[in-house]
Length: 425
Image 1: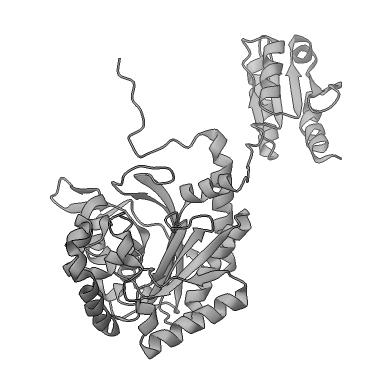
Image 2: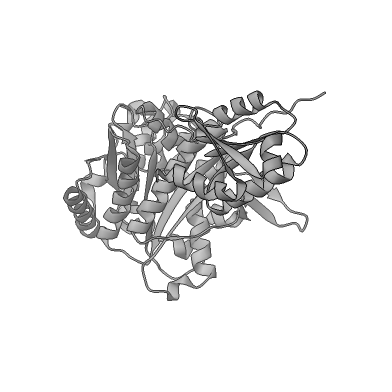
């Protein structure tokens, strides 16, 4: 008989790992609330054009990684590979441009990319994505970076640094691109196949390459950040001043490009300090003032970031931060004998109505076996319903967290007594 396994590049999040996920999601809720963001959830799939236009047709996402399919109606769809274009599509579709600006939105969303699976990188992963639409203020750029920094800080992640860059605006960037192409042209034959292909279509992506064949040429390439237009330089300096005021540790990275075509001006990544080649990015993003227009909307500035939750959890573990699973129950009902099942169910319902986590044992098993299960569940109290208790309309409370003392009470008094014991009253 065939035994199936999870598809390559996916993973099951087992109960022991759930506390990590809960801690990250709780931190996401906290920092987004503190920064005034509203939650949005977009579909798991979109029309493929949303990402072809929004991410750029020379990006790895569109060229190599998207899961694209035709539905039964002949529409070309794609599983969501990254969050920003989908959120921008929703911003336009639902008229959010008429809301008070800027609009601050966030999501935690499943992303799908046909990527080479490796530690911390999966074909299905979950991303915390935050976007601010409707503001060109450099302080908004800084505030978005600060929110991401505070998320890591809140979780206890230390030893990371923001790498900050600027891609200027589209028109001033054209002259730089010609200088960049002139630098790379004599070396084309030595570059990777991807870089040779991108040389004409999107030469900025040469600076984003992680291929070993391309690395020797990156340091000698002309640096865009050294020749920013006056407006972009003023913007870049304002972002730096705001990050300094907030106590966020950053360095200027003149080679920072990011892998998506829609970025302009501010770009950033958060990288562990022990990653000398800055390949282990745990989060990043940038400004994309032209993306709304690419998707059919009016000129609208925007900035955002994405950070993978699986990647955050790896960093938590690397930092020695442990989140242990909590007990499965506060109370465990041990029962045996005729009529014990309905009595256990009724008592459990009363306890759960008071917010007390309660597990019912299996009546076919011995008291001893059920008590072992109670201890395994981490319960503080056991309630015993045996033949004597059932006959007398009573229940026995047994202390599992202390000295094992027992007390028999009328069954109607049990919920209040349990609540008092658990509260320490």
